[in-house]
Amino acid sequence: LMREAYDLGCRKLQFIGGEPQLNRDFHKLLVTANTIGFEFIEVFSNLTQLDDETVCYAAQMGSASPHRSIPTSPRRMTPSPG
Picture: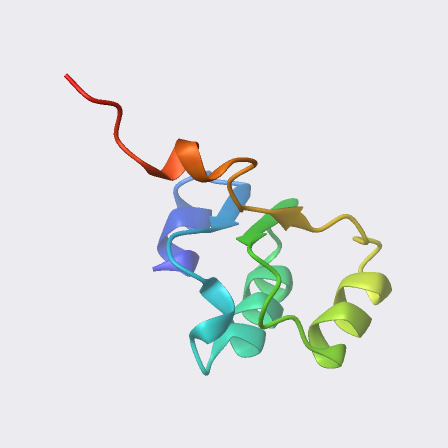
């Protein structure tokens, strides 16, 4: 699917939804996306599964700014009444 998106002109890729790093193939997918040639690869994570392998790979690729996807307040996770 990544190759098809790239071949259609997509140059930006996001790994989002749930916790991407729970996928046992996460690192392989990250390397594949880079190898295909995506110019911008973004991972949204709560960082609970961040491991040394991912940190080292991101540093090698020049990406050292993780995106944390956690609520700033418990109320943001709770639907408002009405």
